[in-house]
Image (cartoon, rainbow, N blue to C red; front, side):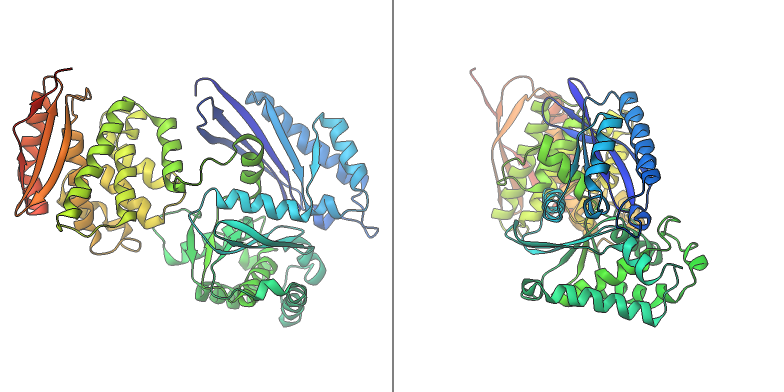
Length: 513
């Protein structure tokens, strides 16, 4: 990106150490351009005296020095480095911090449990469209639980147990019988009971952060043959987690290694993390699980480099604006005109009673109109195909998985028979009625594009209304509209077939400007 800077975010976790490199342009658009991970298992390396041994500190120095070389290679200009539970709870925290700072030249932040909860919440809430719920972040050495209402943090607490140190304490050999499972549940239940607010708001969703939660999501998706490999905003049924909790502990460690979706660096710690998650869910009496792909590292980035924009704009609109800024090839005026016209057509048909108004579907149409040309950033030829892939497989925060697919299919719409073929791989996510819905909204987008096909804003739709069996458009002509008229005429037959309406263009008026 032009006029951009690159920022490194390093999370020294209790299980792994991760580097995320963000690119941020002068207009505020951002993206992650690379990620790196080192398995550290710091919580397992704490000595009997509670200290991290000198040789392990030097191993940390080695990992961070490697990350520093990567940052130089990527021309990173600023880096934020934060350590969590394993370092925070060690008896030699100051020694670790001083050594790492001296050897790397970086300032090392030691996050408190409250900091972890707050930053995890910030990463989640700026990437999900959710009003109320509980948030649980299960790390290697700690678990943070938060309650949020109306998108504001109300309560939070950090407990000193996570997937790694719980494994070390109850099942160091990685095998889980009834004894260890019962002991883990009792430990978690006793800790939760000390915070009465945790059980005071039943019926809310439980949003899960962390690698363990994402791993459970991947296992579940592979078992279900889920058609869209996205973890962010994946709704995980409680019954599916219960099924995994009944199945996984009974498997020998060697068999767990072979489970599809379970990485080899988590096979021994997945069970304690899952039991912690399930016990929290049962205590809060949650409605369902939601997986967040954004968390602590995102919160560290947002807080320092990307302050929250106005909350008046929906998360999905902010996210799609960001995607458009990263991949725009069409003139901004053209995209704005297409969006405005598409929404004007949608509203006119709703007001005329031709279809039922839905704010969420209206937003999907708007996002599809915004992004219909982004595929041209890969290759102009066959750009609708590229646009579909980019929208469906690039995370648009604030949309459900179904809504992401609707946006992708509306943006790339060509004809209803093609849509019937395109939806086949996603029948587990889409509804049967979605083919008709995509055809209707896709046709509106086609018409909006046709009305500015020259991308010069030759005409403007000053009024649109449906009456009897027709959709009427009043136009203001600014200059030669012949290309637009040809395109609209070519769409007449399909529009009538899809909407059951005759498209009527009223005698245009000409601008004197």
